[in-house]
Image 1 (cartoon, one colour):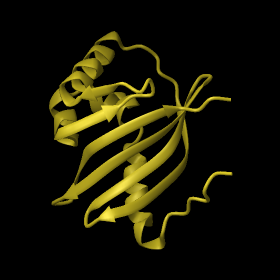
Image 2 (image 1 turned 60 degrees about the vertical axis):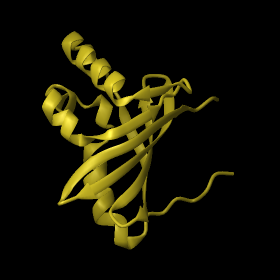
Image 3 (image 1 turned 180 degrees about the vertical axis):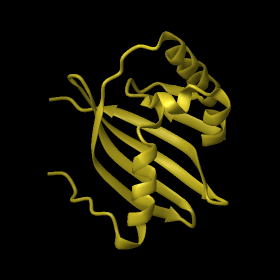
Image 4 (image 1 turned 45 degrees about the horizontal axis):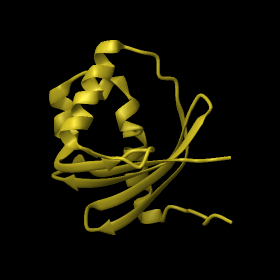
Amino acid sequence: MGPKLITARAQRAVLAELRALEPIFHRPQYFASRSALEQLVSPQFWEIGASGRRYSRAYVLKTLAQRAAARAEDPWETSEFHCRALAPEVFLLTYTLRQGQRLTRRATLWQRRARRWRILFHQGTVVEE
């Protein structure tokens, strides 16, 4: 039923770089430092959460700061990574994220400028059984 997603050979190095960064909003090493996270998240960033709600950059950064302060366990695993070039230095990365019983499909738009990555957009969608 679903598409067969195969990353083109030309994007495999990009896929490896981005796979090491994701899930960006679930890796404590990224949201422990607000300034480091601000460098990764574009000023124009916005997100559609798994709930369908839209979130601003400011809201996401605030939420991650709260999560870092709480230091709650967030066990997760990722799979099914796929990368597609959309424009020069703009890539769509998709993957599956499992957090306990919750399964979501994720999509992140990444832009590379001067060998640095920035998130432009992110979406999570709950997979219903």
